Length: 99
Image 1 (cartoon, rainbow, N blue to C red):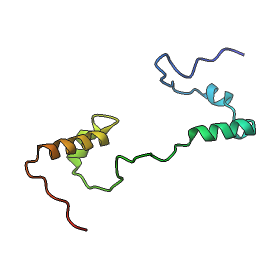
Image 2 (image 1 turned 30 degrees about the vertical axis):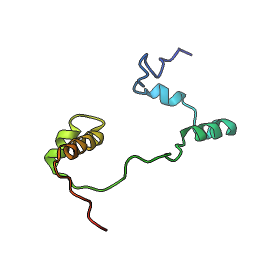
Image 3 (image 1 turned 120 degrees about the vertical axis):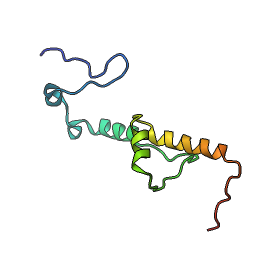
Image 4 (image 1 turned 90 degrees about the vertical axis):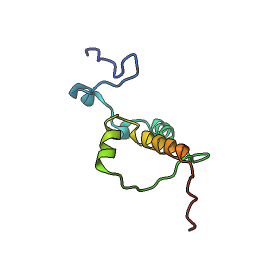
């Protein structure tokens, strides 16, 4: 059997899978049950110890979204940073409305 190319390069980037890679793959259900349990445990993420952000729904103009998304991954974080900078510059920050 010919040796396959590694799936990752020196920087840890995963290369595109070939048909041969797919054919050589082992189905998860075919793995030993003990290995399945270990793999399932690894992929779980625990609860945040101290949540730092809150999930909300917000409407933004198309041009704002287009500009932030054009910067690639992390666009939501860049919007968050821009809003924080805006708050820091505000001379008289508004008080939150009572619920």
